[in-house]
Structures are given as C-alpha cells and as structure tokens.
Length: 535
Image (cartoon, rainbow, N blue to C red; front, top):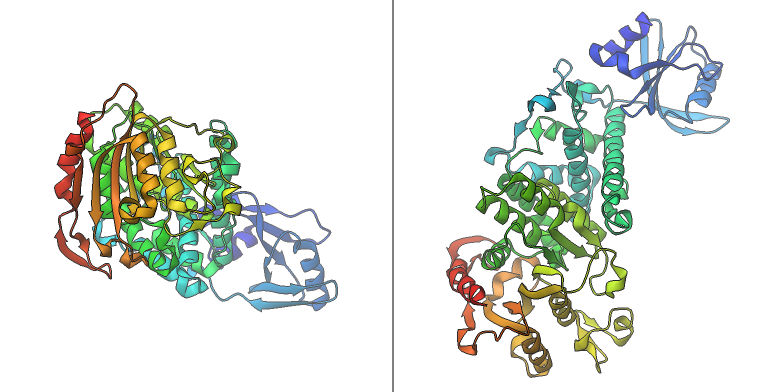
C-alpha cells in the first residue's frame, strides 16, 4: 500500500485526499489492483501493479475493470503509464495516453474548507470586479464545446445549480468538491461534478415532492443530463472554485446573470424575456408586499418573480425572518412551457435566494383540472408578458381550457387568451400588470376584448411603450402596459376620469440595446400607485 500511495502522489493526488478515495479491488482474480472512487463511491480509476508488460495481461485487466471503470492507470516498478481506453471488444482494444490533467494547473494549492456551523465560508463573494464571471463561463462553453448560445446558457445553469448544492450541502470541517486541486485527471473532476449535479436534482425532487403534489412531473426539468465535456468542466471549476455563490449579494448576482443571458436573448430566446426596466416599473407600481401571493403564468426567464423577491426583501428590512422565508418558498409562482426556460428561471431564482420550487413546466392555458396546486381566483398579484403573434387555430383551441374570449371564433391570438387567464387567476381585488400589443387597445376588431375587459376589471392605467422597447430582442411591435384591479361586486370602481393614460418616451436604451442614459420610465410610478390604492 505504501507503493500505491507513493504512485498516487506522483501522479498528482494530495496526500490528505488519498485515504478516503482508495480501496482494494478484490472482485477479480487479477492481483494488485486498486480502485479510486469519487465522493459518491463510484469507481473511476484503477491502479494496477505489473511485473511484466504484455498485451495479454493488459487485455485481461481491461476485461476485469472496464465494466466499472473507463480510465485506467498502469504502473510497473518506477514507470507510470496513464491510458484512456477508447474502444474495447472481447478480441481487441484501443487506447491513448491521457494528456490533460487539472493537476498541472496547481499542484500545491491548499484545499478550501468550510465550517457552516460557525458561519465560516472562506470563499469570496462576487463583486463588481467579477460581474462578468457568468458571461465568461458562457463564452468558455461555447468555445470549448461549440454550443449554440441558448444551449450554452442551459449548461451553465446546470453547472451553477450543482455549484450552489456543493456550497449549501457542505458538512462541517470538510472541503468543497468544486476544486481542481482535488483531482488527478480532468475525467475524475468531470465525474465528480456530474455526480454532484445528479445528487442536487435528486435532493431537490425528494425534498419538494413532500410539499408539492407531483413536483417531479411539473418541476423536474433538471433531470436532464449535464452534457459538458471534461475540458469545459475543468475550466468552469477553475473559474468558480473560489467564489461563494450562495451568500454573494443578490443584486450583483442578478446583474451578472443578466449579462450572461444577453447573447442568448439576441440569438433566438428573445420571446421569453421582458426588458428589466419594464419589469422594475411594473413591480414598483404594483408594490408587492410579503403577504401577497404572486404569479406570472407566462414566466419565461422568471424576472417578474426575481424582481418581486428583490423588491420585498430590500424594501422591508423589519420583516421577521420567518415571513421572509414563507414569501421566498410559498408566495412566488410561475408557469412556463419551455423546459430550458424553466431551468434558466429556476437557476436565477436560486441565485436570488429561492422560490424556484414553484415554477411549473406546463402550458398555462389548460383547464384548471390539470394543475395539482393552482386554483382560479387565488392570487393577489398577476404580472406577465404573454407571448405575442401566435394565432391559435380551432384545432389548437380544442386542446385548451374553455375561454370566454374564444367563444364563436375559429382562431384567437394567444395574447388574448393569456389576458383572460391572468384575470382568471386573480382574486377579487387582486392587482394586474400585463404587457400587451397596442392593437388590443386600439383596433376595431379587438373591441370584443375591451368590452369583456371592462366587465372584469377596473382599469387603472394604460401606459404606451416606445417601439424600441423589444427591438433588441427581435420584436418590433408597439406595446402597452395595462394596470387594473379585479372587480368586486360591492366595489363601484373609479370613474373614467381617473384612469391614467400615459406614454413612456424613453426606456434608457436604443433599438440595438445600447444604453442611452436617458429614461422617463419612473415618472408614472407614483400617480399609478395612488390610483391603485384608491380602489
């Protein structure tokens, strides 16, 4: 065993790390085989002591170990040979020398330990100087694995999800596993990172399934495998190994995450994003508090929810911790059809302090019988930006819930049904903020929508947005924000004279998304809040 320890140290393992990883392999007739395991007791590396090197003996060893182990190390006396098996059959095998090892980066680095019982976290927080960290991670994945922008964003989210789990599941006086100095090969590092990711999703499913019916079915979007290559994972671990994601400031993490998403937004995912100035405006007008039950039924990137979380936790410093915890885990809800977007929004929610467990991966326009834990007329606030432009045919409509606004019609724009669903979700007296095409407010052929709307809510304000609002994300359409309060039979509402009709002339950026430093978007917040509070 002393010889084995010596060899392990020579090929790059830390002395303090060897004991926990090494076990003797007694399950084959081949003598002098040792196996290293990752943190989850999965074998990943075999060490074999040979007196003579011959092809027959190598073949027998590979037959014995390959069902469990892909990477094999041979040594003979003082000679060390590392090989990676490429192809194997009963008659022959091919292999190559493994040339990449994260150990070459830092061979003497000390392990980073943590003591969560004492609140000691020797990792550093993200600050303004490293706000580009997420963007850099996205670029690394695109460069190494050749992924499209939206695919790379998806894989970064899986990595961040696993990184957060590695930090938050830390056992007292043990080390974080996202550290390159622990591993002798890129494949071992990749094996552990993928294992942490798998266990993070298993933990998430197990914990939240106890509270939420059919959680795994509607929220289990992280059960897809992490597809990043070992070289990409080595680079990412190196980038994040000294960073404390869990306790870094939420606003800094939010800006970093937003910066990373920009390439994906401009490369095909723009339909799922609402510009942050618009989100902040709507949240500030509706002014959610810690007791409000909030939903976005077309949640996309989830930014209405993360901004609501930020708004409540930063404007109410005297709220008891128990109430804050309840708000984070029980009061923020979303629905989104795209699995990829649910992964993105759940990751962003985790970075903001949580609420991720209430993002449902399903269609928001189904009958309420399809939702285990959603009820009509139950939410205090609905904020949304439903998809524009899709015309639902009669065949498509037949698969959805029965909506009042589609009766007698062979086709209906998706945003019209989205508007009705938002109002269905509101409780009596609940507050609405929704982005809509301007045509719903102005066109003759949508008069039926306006007539129906006046029967359902008290309209508080209609705010026109400039054409460039959605241009950086691939949509050139005039839009408005509609604010309202759901009718109460005993509530006479407010007179038409008190409806605010306004326009925002500048949102702070141009058609290309470049900052203009000029915005009047906040000018209407106070008068709109006054009108809402009158109802």
